[in-house]
Image (cartoon, rainbow, N blue to C red; front, top):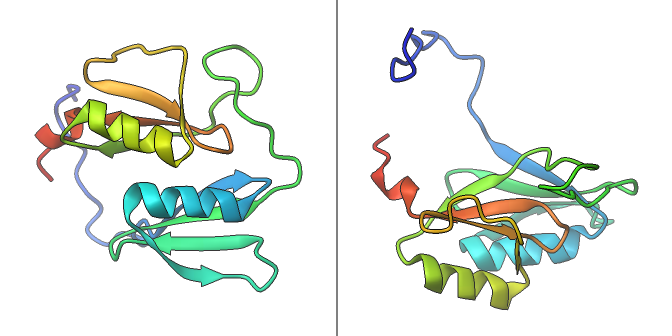
Length: 138
C-alpha cells in the first residue's frame, strides 16, 4: 500500500469518534478557552466541574480534571505532547491573533509557520492553526 492509498473501511465500524478529551488541572478555564476558540457550547458538566464537554454539533471536546497533569514540554524533551489538535482556518495571522487574545501562547518552535502555526492552550497542550485543512476533501 502506498502512502496515498487508504485502507478499506470496515463495513461495520464499532462506533464513531464522539469526543477528544484533554487532561488539565483546570477544566473550567480550558473549556472556556476552547468554547471561545472553536465556537462550541457546553453540552455536559459534572456537578463538581471535573468534566466539561463542549460540542459544535458534530464532535465534542472534553476538558477532564487530572490532578497529576503535567504540562507538555514539546518540542523539548521531558513530557511529550501526548496529542494535538489541528484547527483549519482561512486567515492564519488573524486566527493566531484571536487565539492569543483568548489565552493561547505561540510556541517557540514553529516547524512550518507559513502553513501551520503551533500554539499552546492554557493547560500547555500544543495545537495547530492551519490553512492546510482547507485543501482536504472529506
